[in-house]
Structure formats: C-alpha cells, structure tokens
Image (tube, rainbow, N blue to C red):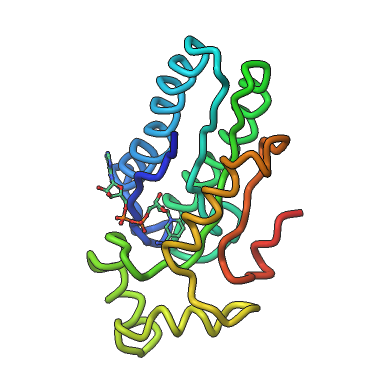
Length: 180
Ligand SMILES: NC(=O)c1ccc[n+]([C@@H]2O[C@H](COP(=O)([O-])OP(=O)(O)OC[C@H]3O[C@@H](n4cnc5c(N)ncnc54)[C@H](O)[C@@H]3O)[C@@H](O)[C@H]2O)c1
C-alpha cells in the first residue's frame, strides 16, 4: 500500500489559516494514518507480510520558508514510517518512505497553480521549472516521476527484504536534506 495522496499549500506562518492547517493534516497525516490502519488490518489478517510505503518529502527534513502546514504534515508522515516499522515488523510488514523533491513533470500539485507561483517567484517561465530545480541539486538532474516509482519498486522488492523504517531521498542530491 502506498500513501501518496497529497496537496500543497505554500504559505507563511502568518498567512496560514487553521483551515489550511487542517486540510493539509487531514489529507496527509490523518489520511495516511487511516489508510495504513486499514491496510495493516488486511495484511495482518492475511498473514503473508507486506509493504507499506509513504511518499513523504524532502520537506519532511528541510526547513524552508512559507511551508509550515505542508512540511509539518510531511514530518508527521515520516515519523509514521518509523513508528509503524517498529510496530508492524512482527507481522513481516515492512514500512518505508521516499523523500522526493521538485517533481514537476506529471504533478497535479505543480500544474494547479503551484508551478506558476514558483516560476514567478524565480523569474522564469513555468516550462523551465524542472530544469531550474535540477540546477539546484548536487547531481544537476531533474527528478522525474519514474525516479520515484523506481525507488518504490526497489523498496518493495526482495533485494531490500531486510530493510524497514528507511527513507530514501529521490532529490538528485540536496545536502540540506541529508538524513543524519
Ligand atoms: N511533486 C513534487 O515535487 C513532490 C515532492 C515531494 C513529495 N511529493 C508528494 O508526492 C505525492 C504526490 O504528489 P504529486 O506531485 O504527484 O501531486 P498530484 O496532485 O499529481 O497527486 C496527488 C494525488 O493526491 C490525490 N488527493 C488529494 N487529496 C486527496 C484526498 N483527500 N483523498 C484522496 N486523494 C487525494 C489527488 O487527487 C492526486 O491524484 C504527494 O503526497 C506530495 O506531497 C511531491
């Protein structure tokens, strides 16, 4: 089961309303709690083990401005990974996460206004945003949806059968979001 549903409201602390906070936390922190709970029940009943994945974010680690509600709920999701890995291991259920950054291509979050907003902030055209983000990374590579999918596949494959409670960054290298 993959906890992927999400949305992003990027606002400063003073602009963020209690409604914004609730929406972000209801969809991501509470939503993934409820879905993980339902999935875990089915997996425990089946007795075959299984995988729960969280698509968290670089922002669960990175402390950038104007992101209080989104980043806080991503940090909540990231800790759910560790908590559930510890709790569900006895049922051979592995719980891992992925921390992507700046996946512009194919993203509803970016295409529904967030991308235009970011492009304006940086003084570039929206179509150049992916390449712009790439230049901020260590590897200078744009992160594509398939890079996230490949990490998900690796985490649920038998190659990583002994790994649980891990977050894999898929961000082309962002030193400020290195896990310590
Ligand atoms: N795009 C990025 O740069 C990026 C970076 C880090 C993390 N993420 C995370 O990756 C995940 C996918 O994001 P994306 O960029 O592909 O955006 P997206 O908008 O393409 O996908 C998000 C999906 O969540 C669904 N969703 C939203 N609210 C829902 C609800 N209440 N119930 C059920 N489904 C709901 C939407 O319908 C949509 O299909 C999100 O959790 C996002 O926070 C994205």
